Length: 325
Length: 251
Image (cartoon, rainbow over all chains, first blue to last red; front, side, top):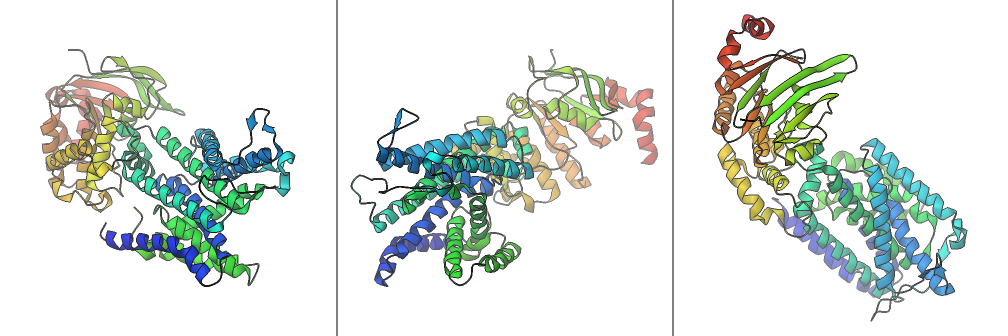
Protein backbone atom coordinates (compact mmCIF):
# COMPACT_ATOMS: atom_id res chain seq x y z
CA UNK A 1 0.00 0.00 0.00
CA UNK A 2 2.75 2.42 0.95
CA UNK A 3 4.72 1.97 -2.25
CA UNK A 4 1.76 1.73 -4.56
CA UNK A 5 3.28 4.50 -6.69
CA UNK A 6 6.39 2.49 -7.33
CA UNK A 7 4.46 -0.65 -8.21
CA UNK A 8 2.35 1.36 -10.67
CA UNK A 9 5.54 2.67 -12.23
CA UNK A 10 6.90 -0.83 -12.71
CA UNK A 11 3.61 -2.01 -14.23
CA UNK A 12 3.63 0.93 -16.63
CA UNK A 13 7.25 0.25 -17.60
CA UNK A 14 6.35 -3.39 -18.23
CA UNK A 15 3.43 -2.39 -20.44
CA UNK A 16 5.61 -0.05 -22.49
CA UNK A 17 8.27 -2.74 -22.83
CA UNK A 18 5.67 -5.25 -24.08
CA UNK A 19 4.37 -2.69 -26.58
CA UNK A 20 7.72 -1.61 -28.07
CA UNK A 21 9.48 -4.99 -27.97
CA UNK A 22 8.72 -6.09 -31.59
CA UNK A 23 9.67 -2.66 -32.86
CA UNK A 24 12.86 -2.71 -30.80
CA UNK A 25 14.14 -6.12 -31.91
CA UNK A 26 13.35 -5.26 -35.53
CA UNK A 27 15.23 -1.99 -35.20
CA UNK A 28 18.37 -3.82 -34.04
CA UNK A 29 18.01 -6.26 -36.93
CA UNK A 30 16.92 -9.32 -34.93
CA UNK A 31 13.24 -9.74 -35.91
CA UNK A 32 13.38 -13.50 -35.22
CA UNK A 33 13.39 -12.55 -31.53
CA UNK A 34 9.71 -11.64 -31.80
CA UNK A 35 8.87 -15.33 -31.46
CA UNK A 36 10.87 -15.45 -28.23
CA UNK A 37 8.82 -12.53 -26.93
CA UNK A 38 5.58 -14.30 -27.83
CA UNK A 39 6.70 -17.41 -25.97
CA UNK A 40 7.50 -15.31 -22.89
CA UNK A 41 4.07 -13.68 -22.93
CA UNK A 42 2.30 -17.02 -23.38
CA UNK A 43 4.21 -18.65 -20.52
CA UNK A 44 3.61 -15.48 -18.50
CA UNK A 45 -0.12 -15.94 -19.04
CA UNK A 46 0.05 -19.57 -17.93
CA UNK A 47 2.18 -18.70 -14.88
CA UNK A 48 -0.09 -15.82 -13.86
CA UNK A 49 -3.09 -18.16 -14.07
CA UNK A 50 -1.24 -20.60 -11.81
CA UNK A 51 -0.53 -17.79 -9.34
CA UNK A 52 -4.29 -17.31 -8.93
CA UNK A 53 -4.55 -20.64 -7.16
CA UNK A 54 -1.03 -21.01 -5.72
CA UNK A 55 -0.47 -17.46 -4.56
CA UNK A 56 -3.96 -16.28 -3.73
CA UNK A 57 -5.81 -19.50 -2.98
CA UNK A 58 -2.97 -21.37 -1.25
CA UNK A 59 -3.49 -24.41 -3.51
CA UNK A 60 -0.11 -25.63 -4.75
CA UNK A 61 -0.94 -27.48 -7.95
CA UNK A 62 1.78 -29.56 -9.57
CA UNK A 63 -0.35 -30.42 -12.57
CA UNK A 64 -0.99 -27.11 -14.24
CA UNK A 65 0.67 -28.22 -17.50
CA UNK A 66 -2.25 -30.63 -18.00
CA UNK A 67 -4.60 -27.73 -18.75
CA UNK A 68 -1.95 -25.96 -20.79
CA UNK A 69 -1.49 -29.11 -22.88
CA UNK A 70 -5.23 -29.71 -23.26
CA UNK A 71 -5.62 -26.19 -24.65
CA UNK A 72 -2.78 -26.87 -27.07
CA UNK A 73 -4.24 -30.18 -28.22
CA UNK A 74 -7.68 -28.64 -28.83
CA UNK A 75 -5.96 -26.37 -31.37
CA UNK A 76 -3.86 -29.20 -32.83
CA UNK A 77 -6.68 -31.74 -33.11
CA UNK A 78 -9.20 -29.29 -34.59
CA UNK A 79 -6.58 -28.12 -37.10
CA UNK A 80 -5.84 -31.76 -37.97
CA UNK A 81 -9.51 -32.44 -38.73
CA UNK A 82 -9.92 -29.17 -40.61
CA UNK A 83 -7.01 -30.16 -42.83
CA UNK A 84 -8.19 -33.76 -43.33
CA UNK A 85 -11.81 -32.70 -43.76
CA UNK A 86 -12.95 -35.29 -41.20
CA UNK A 87 -15.03 -35.03 -38.06
CA UNK A 88 -13.72 -35.51 -34.54
CA UNK A 89 -15.60 -38.45 -32.90
CA UNK A 90 -17.75 -38.49 -36.04
CA UNK A 91 -19.66 -35.28 -35.39
CA UNK A 92 -17.34 -32.38 -34.45
CA UNK A 93 -15.91 -30.72 -37.58
CA UNK A 94 -12.36 -29.35 -37.48
CA UNK A 95 -11.72 -25.64 -37.46
CA UNK A 96 -9.03 -23.07 -38.10
CA UNK A 97 -10.98 -20.10 -36.79
CA UNK A 98 -9.46 -18.60 -33.64
CA UNK A 99 -12.86 -17.32 -32.54
CA UNK A 100 -14.09 -20.92 -32.49
CA UNK A 101 -10.97 -22.81 -31.51
CA UNK A 102 -9.73 -20.63 -28.66
CA UNK A 103 -13.03 -20.52 -26.75
CA UNK A 104 -13.19 -24.29 -27.28
CA UNK A 105 -9.71 -24.63 -25.75
CA UNK A 106 -10.78 -22.50 -22.77
CA UNK A 107 -13.96 -24.54 -22.35
CA UNK A 108 -12.36 -27.98 -22.58
CA UNK A 109 -9.47 -27.04 -20.27
CA UNK A 110 -11.95 -25.45 -17.85
CA UNK A 111 -14.10 -28.58 -17.80
CA UNK A 112 -11.02 -30.74 -17.21
CA UNK A 113 -10.01 -28.42 -14.34
CA UNK A 114 -13.53 -28.64 -12.91
CA UNK A 115 -13.41 -32.44 -12.91
CA UNK A 116 -9.84 -32.73 -11.62
CA UNK A 117 -10.38 -29.97 -9.09
CA UNK A 118 -13.60 -31.52 -7.79
CA UNK A 119 -11.65 -34.62 -6.81
CA UNK A 120 -8.27 -33.09 -5.88
CA UNK A 121 -9.66 -30.35 -3.66
CA UNK A 122 -10.89 -32.96 -1.19
CA UNK A 123 -7.23 -33.16 -0.18
CA UNK A 124 -4.76 -30.49 0.85
CA UNK A 125 -1.05 -29.85 1.26
CA UNK A 126 1.30 -32.55 0.02
CA UNK A 127 -1.61 -34.81 -0.95
CA UNK A 128 -2.99 -32.08 -3.18
CA UNK A 129 0.40 -31.64 -4.85
CA UNK A 130 0.64 -35.37 -5.52
CA UNK A 131 -2.91 -35.87 -6.77
CA UNK A 132 -2.70 -32.96 -9.23
CA UNK A 133 0.61 -34.39 -10.46
CA UNK A 134 -1.00 -37.82 -10.83
CA UNK A 135 -3.88 -36.46 -12.92
CA UNK A 136 -1.45 -34.55 -15.13
CA UNK A 137 0.61 -37.70 -15.68
CA UNK A 138 -2.52 -39.65 -16.62
CA UNK A 139 -3.35 -37.06 -19.27
CA UNK A 140 0.26 -37.01 -20.45
CA UNK A 141 0.14 -40.74 -21.16
CA UNK A 142 -3.31 -40.42 -22.71
CA UNK A 143 -1.90 -38.05 -25.35
CA UNK A 144 1.21 -40.23 -25.80
CA UNK A 145 -1.12 -43.10 -26.67
CA UNK A 146 -3.19 -41.15 -29.24
CA UNK A 147 -1.53 -42.52 -32.40
CA UNK A 148 -3.96 -40.68 -34.71
CA UNK A 149 -2.63 -37.39 -33.42
CA UNK A 150 1.03 -38.34 -33.60
CA UNK A 151 1.42 -40.00 -30.22
CA UNK A 152 4.92 -39.41 -28.87
CA UNK A 153 6.02 -37.46 -31.92
CA UNK A 154 3.34 -34.83 -31.67
CA UNK A 155 1.30 -33.16 -34.34
CA UNK A 156 2.34 -30.44 -36.78
CA UNK A 157 -0.23 -28.22 -38.41
CA UNK A 158 -0.44 -25.03 -40.38
CA UNK A 159 -1.42 -22.34 -40.79
CA UNK A 160 -2.03 -20.56 -37.49
CA UNK A 161 -5.66 -20.10 -36.46
CA UNK A 162 -7.28 -17.27 -38.38
CA UNK A 163 -8.32 -14.08 -36.63
CA UNK A 164 -10.73 -11.93 -38.71
CA UNK A 165 -9.01 -8.83 -40.06
CA UNK A 166 -5.53 -9.93 -38.97
CA UNK A 167 -2.72 -11.85 -40.55
CA UNK A 168 -1.65 -14.22 -37.77
CA UNK A 169 1.06 -15.69 -40.03
CA UNK A 170 2.83 -12.42 -39.40
CA UNK A 171 4.81 -12.91 -36.17
CA UNK A 172 4.39 -9.30 -35.09
CA UNK A 173 0.59 -9.41 -35.47
CA UNK A 174 0.42 -12.65 -33.53
CA UNK A 175 2.67 -11.18 -30.83
CA UNK A 176 0.24 -8.30 -30.34
CA UNK A 177 -2.76 -10.65 -30.20
CA UNK A 178 -1.03 -12.57 -27.40
CA UNK A 179 0.02 -9.34 -25.64
CA UNK A 180 -3.57 -8.09 -25.72
CA UNK A 181 -4.91 -11.33 -24.24
CA UNK A 182 -2.26 -11.30 -21.49
CA UNK A 183 -2.95 -7.69 -20.51
CA UNK A 184 -6.69 -8.36 -20.68
CA UNK A 185 -6.33 -11.31 -18.32
CA UNK A 186 -4.18 -9.35 -15.87
CA UNK A 187 -6.75 -6.53 -15.73
CA UNK A 188 -9.61 -8.98 -15.18
CA UNK A 189 -7.65 -10.94 -12.58
CA UNK A 190 -6.74 -7.77 -10.68
CA UNK A 191 -10.42 -6.78 -10.53
CA UNK A 192 -11.44 -10.26 -9.48
CA UNK A 193 -8.85 -10.43 -6.73
CA UNK A 194 -9.97 -7.09 -5.27
CA UNK A 195 -13.64 -8.01 -5.58
CA UNK A 196 -15.68 -10.14 -3.20
CA UNK A 197 -14.46 -13.34 -4.80
CA UNK A 198 -10.84 -12.36 -4.25
CA UNK A 199 -11.48 -11.54 -0.61
CA UNK A 200 -12.89 -14.98 0.16
CA UNK A 201 -10.22 -16.66 -1.95
CA UNK A 202 -7.47 -14.97 0.07
CA UNK A 203 -9.40 -15.74 3.23
CA UNK A 204 -9.29 -19.42 2.28
CA UNK A 205 -5.52 -19.19 1.97
CA UNK A 206 -5.20 -17.50 5.36
CA UNK A 207 -7.45 -19.75 7.42
CA UNK A 208 -9.92 -22.14 5.88
CA UNK A 209 -11.36 -23.22 9.22
CA UNK A 210 -12.07 -19.64 10.20
CA UNK A 211 -13.98 -19.06 6.98
CA UNK A 212 -16.11 -22.14 7.56
CA UNK A 213 -16.83 -20.88 11.09
CA UNK A 214 -18.12 -17.63 9.58
CA UNK A 215 -20.42 -19.58 7.27
CA UNK A 216 -18.38 -19.63 4.06
CA UNK A 217 -17.88 -23.16 2.68
CA UNK A 218 -14.35 -23.05 1.20
CA UNK A 219 -14.80 -25.93 -1.28
CA UNK A 220 -16.90 -24.07 -3.85
CA UNK A 221 -14.65 -21.02 -3.73
CA UNK A 222 -11.54 -23.13 -4.28
CA UNK A 223 -13.15 -25.12 -7.08
CA UNK A 224 -14.25 -21.94 -8.88
CA UNK A 225 -10.71 -20.53 -8.68
CA UNK A 226 -9.17 -23.83 -9.79
CA UNK A 227 -11.52 -24.06 -12.79
CA UNK A 228 -10.88 -20.49 -13.84
CA UNK A 229 -7.14 -20.96 -13.51
CA UNK A 230 -7.25 -24.14 -15.61
CA UNK A 231 -9.36 -22.45 -18.28
CA UNK A 232 -6.86 -19.60 -18.66
CA UNK A 233 -3.99 -22.10 -18.79
CA UNK A 234 -5.94 -23.73 -21.64
CA UNK A 235 -5.97 -20.42 -23.51
CA UNK A 236 -2.22 -20.09 -22.95
CA UNK A 237 -1.73 -23.61 -24.31
CA UNK A 238 -3.82 -22.76 -27.38
CA UNK A 239 -1.64 -19.71 -28.00
CA UNK A 240 1.56 -21.72 -27.53
CA UNK A 241 0.33 -24.31 -30.03
CA UNK A 242 -0.28 -21.50 -32.51
CA UNK A 243 3.11 -19.95 -31.89
CA UNK A 244 4.90 -23.25 -32.59
CA UNK A 245 2.31 -24.67 -35.07
CA UNK A 246 3.07 -27.91 -33.29
CA UNK A 247 1.74 -29.80 -30.27
CA UNK A 248 3.22 -32.80 -28.49
CA UNK A 249 2.77 -34.55 -25.14
CA UNK A 250 5.79 -32.48 -24.05
CA UNK A 251 3.28 -29.66 -23.36
CA UNK A 252 1.78 -31.77 -20.55
CA UNK A 253 5.03 -33.15 -19.17
CA UNK A 254 5.43 -32.83 -15.42
CA UNK A 255 8.59 -30.75 -15.91
CA UNK A 256 6.37 -28.16 -17.63
CA UNK A 257 4.27 -27.97 -14.45
CA UNK A 258 7.56 -27.54 -12.57
CA UNK A 259 8.65 -24.74 -14.91
CA UNK A 260 5.38 -22.91 -14.29
CA UNK A 261 5.83 -23.21 -10.51
CA UNK A 262 9.41 -21.94 -10.83
CA UNK A 263 8.16 -18.94 -12.82
CA UNK A 264 5.64 -18.16 -10.10
CA UNK A 265 8.18 -18.49 -7.28
CA UNK A 266 10.90 -16.63 -9.19
CA UNK A 267 8.58 -13.75 -10.07
CA UNK A 268 6.81 -13.64 -6.73
CA UNK A 269 4.04 -15.82 -5.29
CA UNK A 270 0.80 -13.95 -4.88
CA UNK A 271 1.89 -10.89 -6.87
CA UNK A 272 -0.08 -11.68 -10.07
CA UNK A 273 2.28 -9.66 -12.31
CA UNK A 274 5.42 -11.23 -10.86
CA UNK A 275 4.96 -14.60 -12.61
CA UNK A 276 5.05 -12.82 -16.00
CA UNK A 277 8.40 -11.38 -14.99
CA UNK A 278 9.39 -14.84 -13.74
CA UNK A 279 8.50 -16.33 -17.12
CA UNK A 280 10.62 -13.72 -18.89
CA UNK A 281 13.63 -14.30 -16.64
CA UNK A 282 13.42 -18.10 -16.80
CA UNK A 283 13.02 -18.23 -20.58
CA UNK A 284 15.78 -15.65 -21.17
CA UNK A 285 18.14 -17.48 -18.81
CA UNK A 286 17.37 -20.74 -20.57
CA UNK A 287 17.87 -19.23 -24.02
CA UNK A 288 21.12 -17.48 -23.19
CA UNK A 289 22.67 -20.14 -20.98
CA UNK A 290 21.62 -23.07 -23.16
CA UNK A 291 23.86 -21.73 -25.94
CA UNK A 292 26.71 -21.92 -23.52
CA UNK A 293 26.05 -25.21 -21.71
CA UNK A 294 23.44 -27.94 -21.56
CA UNK A 295 23.64 -27.78 -17.79
CA UNK A 296 22.15 -24.29 -17.53
CA UNK A 297 20.08 -25.37 -14.52
CA UNK A 298 23.37 -25.19 -12.56
CA UNK A 299 23.10 -21.41 -12.78
CA UNK A 300 19.35 -21.24 -12.26
CA UNK A 301 19.45 -23.35 -9.09
CA UNK A 302 21.53 -20.96 -6.96
CA UNK A 303 19.55 -17.97 -8.27
CA UNK A 304 16.32 -19.60 -7.09
CA UNK A 305 17.78 -20.52 -3.71
CA UNK A 306 19.06 -16.97 -3.19
CA UNK A 307 15.72 -15.46 -4.15
CA UNK A 308 13.73 -17.72 -1.86
CA UNK A 309 16.11 -17.05 1.03
CA UNK A 310 16.49 -13.30 0.61
CA UNK A 311 13.47 -12.04 -1.31
CA UNK A 312 10.30 -13.75 -0.12
CA UNK A 313 8.13 -11.91 -2.61
CA UNK A 314 10.37 -12.89 -5.53
CA UNK A 315 11.70 -10.57 -8.22
CA UNK A 316 8.49 -8.57 -8.31
CA UNK A 317 8.90 -7.57 -4.66
CA UNK A 318 12.51 -6.54 -5.33
CA UNK A 319 11.48 -4.45 -8.31
CA UNK A 320 8.22 -2.97 -7.11
CA UNK A 321 9.11 -2.76 -3.42
CA UNK A 322 5.95 -4.58 -2.42
CA UNK A 323 5.31 -7.54 -0.26
CA UNK A 324 2.96 -10.37 -0.95
CA UNK A 325 -0.60 -9.07 -0.88
CA UNK B 1 -40.15 -20.32 26.12
CA UNK B 2 -38.75 -22.97 23.76
CA UNK B 3 -34.98 -23.26 23.77
CA UNK B 4 -32.93 -21.75 20.95
CA UNK B 5 -30.42 -24.56 21.13
CA UNK B 6 -31.29 -28.01 22.34
CA UNK B 7 -28.66 -30.73 22.49
CA UNK B 8 -29.81 -34.20 23.51
CA UNK B 9 -27.79 -37.29 24.35
CA UNK B 10 -24.61 -36.08 22.69
CA UNK B 11 -21.73 -38.55 22.61
CA UNK B 12 -18.22 -38.16 21.25
CA UNK B 13 -15.58 -40.85 21.57
CA UNK B 14 -11.92 -40.60 20.63
CA UNK B 15 -10.83 -44.24 20.57
CA UNK B 16 -11.42 -45.47 24.09
CA UNK B 17 -11.81 -42.00 25.56
CA UNK B 18 -15.35 -40.71 25.98
CA UNK B 19 -15.00 -36.94 25.58
CA UNK B 20 -18.72 -36.20 25.60
CA UNK B 21 -20.85 -38.61 27.57
CA UNK B 22 -24.60 -38.58 26.89
CA UNK B 23 -24.78 -34.85 27.39
CA UNK B 24 -27.96 -32.80 27.18
CA UNK B 25 -28.01 -29.04 27.29
CA UNK B 26 -30.26 -26.20 26.24
CA UNK B 27 -29.77 -22.50 25.71
CA UNK B 28 -32.79 -20.16 25.90
CA UNK B 29 -33.28 -17.17 23.64
CA UNK B 30 -31.41 -14.13 24.99
CA UNK B 31 -29.66 -16.17 27.63
CA UNK B 32 -25.99 -16.16 28.55
CA UNK B 33 -25.27 -19.74 29.45
CA UNK B 34 -21.85 -20.55 30.86
CA UNK B 35 -20.11 -23.89 30.58
CA UNK B 36 -17.52 -24.56 33.26
CA UNK B 37 -15.52 -27.57 34.29
CA UNK B 38 -11.98 -28.70 35.04
CA UNK B 39 -9.39 -29.14 32.29
CA UNK B 40 -10.21 -32.13 30.13
CA UNK B 41 -13.90 -32.03 30.97
CA UNK B 42 -14.69 -31.89 27.26
CA UNK B 43 -15.73 -28.25 26.91
CA UNK B 44 -13.90 -27.54 23.68
CA UNK B 45 -15.05 -30.87 22.22
CA UNK B 46 -18.63 -29.96 23.00
CA UNK B 47 -18.25 -26.53 21.36
CA UNK B 48 -16.82 -28.20 18.25
CA UNK B 49 -19.75 -30.64 18.17
CA UNK B 50 -22.30 -27.87 18.55
CA UNK B 51 -20.63 -25.75 15.87
CA UNK B 52 -20.56 -28.67 13.45
CA UNK B 53 -16.82 -29.05 13.26
CA UNK B 54 -16.88 -32.47 14.91
CA UNK B 55 -19.47 -35.08 14.02
CA UNK B 56 -21.20 -36.54 17.08
CA UNK B 57 -21.26 -40.31 17.54
CA UNK B 58 -24.77 -40.09 18.95
CA UNK B 59 -27.39 -37.53 19.91
CA UNK B 60 -29.27 -34.71 18.22
CA UNK B 61 -28.81 -30.96 18.05
CA UNK B 62 -31.81 -28.76 17.36
CA UNK B 63 -31.23 -25.09 16.66
CA UNK B 64 -33.85 -22.43 16.05
CA UNK B 65 -36.55 -25.02 15.49
CA UNK B 66 -34.67 -27.27 13.09
CA UNK B 67 -32.53 -30.37 13.39
CA UNK B 68 -28.99 -29.31 12.47
CA UNK B 69 -27.25 -32.52 13.56
CA UNK B 70 -26.22 -33.40 10.01
CA UNK B 71 -25.15 -29.92 8.88
CA UNK B 72 -21.49 -28.87 8.54
CA UNK B 73 -19.92 -25.88 10.24
CA UNK B 74 -20.51 -23.38 7.41
CA UNK B 75 -24.16 -24.36 7.03
CA UNK B 76 -24.80 -24.01 10.78
CA UNK B 77 -23.02 -20.64 10.82
CA UNK B 78 -25.32 -19.41 8.06
CA UNK B 79 -28.29 -20.34 10.25
CA UNK B 80 -26.88 -18.18 13.03
CA UNK B 81 -24.96 -20.69 15.14
CA UNK B 82 -21.51 -19.13 15.14
CA UNK B 83 -18.42 -20.00 17.13
CA UNK B 84 -15.25 -18.19 18.10
CA UNK B 85 -11.97 -19.94 18.74
CA UNK B 86 -9.94 -20.49 21.88
CA UNK B 87 -6.74 -20.02 19.88
CA UNK B 88 -7.10 -16.72 18.08
CA UNK B 89 -8.15 -17.31 14.48
CA UNK B 90 -8.20 -13.95 12.74
CA UNK B 91 -6.79 -13.69 9.22
CA UNK B 92 -3.24 -12.46 9.89
CA UNK B 93 -2.49 -10.85 6.50
CA UNK B 94 -5.85 -9.06 6.37
CA UNK B 95 -6.28 -5.63 7.95
CA UNK B 96 -8.75 -5.19 10.80
CA UNK B 97 -11.25 -3.66 8.40
CA UNK B 98 -10.78 -6.43 5.83
CA UNK B 99 -11.27 -9.11 8.48
CA UNK B 100 -14.57 -7.56 9.46
CA UNK B 101 -15.66 -6.84 5.89
CA UNK B 102 -15.10 -10.49 5.07
CA UNK B 103 -17.21 -11.52 8.04
CA UNK B 104 -19.98 -9.16 6.87
CA UNK B 105 -19.67 -10.70 3.41
CA UNK B 106 -20.07 -14.13 4.99
CA UNK B 107 -23.48 -13.02 6.26
CA UNK B 108 -24.56 -11.40 2.99
CA UNK B 109 -23.42 -14.33 0.82
CA UNK B 110 -22.85 -13.54 -2.87
CA UNK B 111 -19.18 -14.46 -2.86
CA UNK B 112 -18.99 -14.70 -6.62
CA UNK B 113 -18.55 -11.00 -7.29
CA UNK B 114 -15.79 -10.74 -9.87
CA UNK B 115 -15.65 -7.08 -10.82
CA UNK B 116 -16.66 -4.56 -8.18
CA UNK B 117 -13.93 -3.66 -5.67
CA UNK B 118 -14.90 -5.08 -2.27
CA UNK B 119 -13.12 -2.20 -0.51
CA UNK B 120 -15.48 0.32 -2.18
CA UNK B 121 -18.65 -1.63 -1.42
CA UNK B 122 -20.66 0.26 1.23
CA UNK B 123 -22.71 -2.87 1.97
CA UNK B 124 -19.51 -4.42 3.35
CA UNK B 125 -17.57 -1.38 4.50
CA UNK B 126 -20.23 0.43 6.50
CA UNK B 127 -21.28 -2.40 8.84
CA UNK B 128 -17.61 -3.35 9.25
CA UNK B 129 -16.71 0.19 10.28
CA UNK B 130 -19.64 0.44 12.67
CA UNK B 131 -18.66 -2.78 14.36
CA UNK B 132 -15.01 -1.75 14.51
CA UNK B 133 -15.93 1.44 16.36
CA UNK B 134 -18.29 -0.41 18.67
CA UNK B 135 -15.68 -2.97 19.64
CA UNK B 136 -13.04 -0.27 20.17
CA UNK B 137 -10.71 -1.00 17.26
CA UNK B 138 -11.71 2.02 15.17
CA UNK B 139 -8.25 3.56 15.24
CA UNK B 140 -6.62 0.38 13.92
CA UNK B 141 -8.67 -0.06 10.73
CA UNK B 142 -5.70 -0.45 8.38
CA UNK B 143 -3.45 -2.37 10.75
CA UNK B 144 -2.76 -5.96 9.71
CA UNK B 145 -4.30 -8.41 12.16
CA UNK B 146 -0.95 -10.07 12.83
CA UNK B 147 0.42 -6.74 14.09
CA UNK B 148 -2.26 -6.40 16.78
CA UNK B 149 -1.71 -7.04 20.48
CA UNK B 150 -3.13 -10.30 21.78
CA UNK B 151 -6.07 -8.63 23.50
CA UNK B 152 -6.92 -6.68 20.36
CA UNK B 153 -6.85 -9.87 18.32
CA UNK B 154 -9.31 -11.43 20.77
CA UNK B 155 -11.59 -8.40 20.35
CA UNK B 156 -11.34 -8.69 16.58
CA UNK B 157 -12.10 -12.40 16.83
CA UNK B 158 -15.28 -11.60 18.75
CA UNK B 159 -16.20 -8.79 16.36
CA UNK B 160 -15.87 -11.12 13.37
CA UNK B 161 -18.31 -13.56 14.96
CA UNK B 162 -20.67 -10.64 15.68
CA UNK B 163 -20.43 -9.35 12.11
CA UNK B 164 -22.26 -12.47 10.95
CA UNK B 165 -25.21 -11.35 13.15
CA UNK B 166 -25.50 -14.68 14.93
CA UNK B 167 -28.50 -15.86 16.93
CA UNK B 168 -26.24 -17.85 19.23
CA UNK B 169 -22.56 -17.22 19.87
CA UNK B 170 -20.41 -20.11 21.01
CA UNK B 171 -17.52 -18.41 22.78
CA UNK B 172 -14.59 -20.67 23.57
CA UNK B 173 -12.59 -18.94 26.30
CA UNK B 174 -12.77 -15.38 24.97
CA UNK B 175 -10.52 -14.26 27.84
CA UNK B 176 -7.78 -16.83 27.16
CA UNK B 177 -4.31 -15.38 27.62
CA UNK B 178 -5.54 -11.91 28.52
CA UNK B 179 -4.19 -9.69 31.26
CA UNK B 180 -6.55 -8.38 33.99
CA UNK B 181 -7.10 -5.05 32.23
CA UNK B 182 -7.92 -6.69 28.90
CA UNK B 183 -10.17 -9.19 30.65
CA UNK B 184 -12.18 -6.42 32.28
CA UNK B 185 -12.57 -4.76 28.89
CA UNK B 186 -13.78 -8.01 27.33
CA UNK B 187 -16.26 -8.64 30.17
CA UNK B 188 -17.67 -5.16 29.59
CA UNK B 189 -18.01 -5.91 25.88
CA UNK B 190 -19.77 -9.19 26.51
CA UNK B 191 -22.11 -7.53 29.02
CA UNK B 192 -23.15 -5.11 26.26
CA UNK B 193 -24.11 -8.07 24.10
CA UNK B 194 -26.39 -9.59 26.71
CA UNK B 195 -29.97 -9.73 25.55
CA UNK B 196 -28.97 -8.84 21.97
CA UNK B 197 -27.57 -12.25 21.23
CA UNK B 198 -27.67 -15.56 23.07
CA UNK B 199 -24.29 -16.77 24.28
CA UNK B 200 -22.89 -20.12 25.25
CA UNK B 201 -19.72 -19.20 27.09
CA UNK B 202 -16.84 -21.52 27.96
CA UNK B 203 -14.58 -19.75 30.41
CA UNK B 204 -12.07 -20.52 33.13
CA UNK B 205 -12.29 -17.08 34.69
CA UNK B 206 -14.90 -17.59 37.44
CA UNK B 207 -15.22 -13.89 38.06
CA UNK B 208 -16.27 -13.46 34.43
CA UNK B 209 -18.64 -16.42 34.54
CA UNK B 210 -20.49 -15.25 37.62
CA UNK B 211 -20.62 -11.68 36.31
CA UNK B 212 -22.13 -12.64 32.96
CA UNK B 213 -24.03 -15.90 33.14
CA UNK B 214 -27.77 -16.31 33.64
CA UNK B 215 -27.31 -20.04 34.01
CA UNK B 216 -24.28 -22.23 34.49
CA UNK B 217 -23.74 -25.85 33.46
CA UNK B 218 -20.91 -27.78 35.09
CA UNK B 219 -19.17 -30.36 32.96
CA UNK B 220 -17.15 -33.21 34.45
CA UNK B 221 -15.75 -36.09 32.40
CA UNK B 222 -17.89 -35.15 29.43
CA UNK B 223 -21.17 -35.15 31.30
CA UNK B 224 -23.26 -32.36 32.84
CA UNK B 225 -23.28 -32.75 36.64
CA UNK B 226 -25.37 -29.66 37.39
CA UNK B 227 -27.23 -26.79 35.73
CA UNK B 228 -28.62 -23.76 37.52
CA UNK B 229 -28.30 -20.11 38.39
CA UNK B 230 -24.81 -18.94 39.37
CA UNK B 231 -25.91 -18.75 43.03
CA UNK B 232 -27.28 -22.29 43.02
CA UNK B 233 -24.16 -23.61 41.33
CA UNK B 234 -21.89 -21.88 43.80
CA UNK B 235 -23.75 -23.60 46.64
CA UNK B 236 -24.03 -27.06 45.04
CA UNK B 237 -21.91 -29.52 47.04
CA UNK B 238 -21.31 -31.80 44.06
CA UNK B 239 -19.99 -28.86 42.08
CA UNK B 240 -17.78 -27.65 44.89
CA UNK B 241 -16.27 -31.09 45.17
CA UNK B 242 -15.77 -31.54 41.45
CA UNK B 243 -14.49 -28.19 40.53
CA UNK B 244 -14.93 -25.01 42.53
CA UNK B 245 -13.44 -26.41 45.72
CA UNK B 246 -10.14 -27.38 44.22
CA UNK B 247 -10.06 -24.16 42.27
CA UNK B 248 -10.38 -22.07 45.41
CA UNK B 249 -7.81 -24.11 47.27
CA UNK B 250 -5.19 -23.48 44.63
CA UNK B 251 -6.12 -19.82 44.29
